[in-house]
Amino acid sequence: MPNATAPASKSEKAPVRPFDYLHFYRTPPVERIAIIKRGFSAKSAKYILGMMHLDQKNMFRALNIKTATINKKAAQNENLSLGDAERVLGLAKLLGQIEAMVEESGDPEGFDAASWLSRWLREPLPALGDAPMNFLDTMEGQTLVAQALAQMQSGAYA
Image (cartoon, rainbow, N blue to C red; front, side):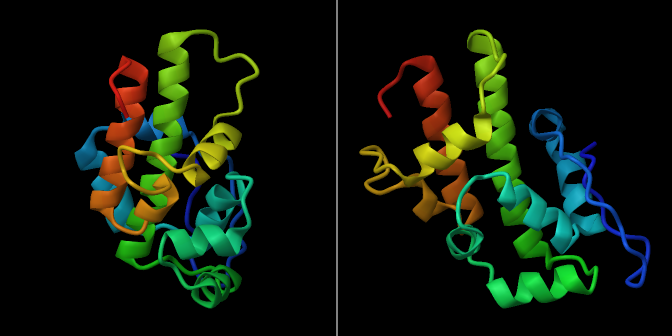
């Protein structure tokens, strides 16, 4: 199970702990759904998005999350809506997918999956007809991005 957690109460200051992207990627879908439905803190979401080495406003926009909403919820130790949490955790799953690909394909030592994914998301991808970042706002779009990554690993045209 991921390490980033929501606070027990709104008044409690919950520390945001590192998130295990690879473990989350390998978690069975039913368990990932349970994590989303339990609630995912806005602070944890900001931590995950901060790992992407991109301007957070751009990431919020790509995920169709209002900056003011996530900042307010983070300040008040609140959880994201189900849809917002699902999109953020979908991005975390993509990061875990990259970590798994590198682990399976070679030596992951020193590889910064977040930096690589951040660059790749911004580059136009002919198979999608646009930059992958422009598909992160829906789960169907995130599925297309995940499929494109899998095709790259297998050597299929993407």
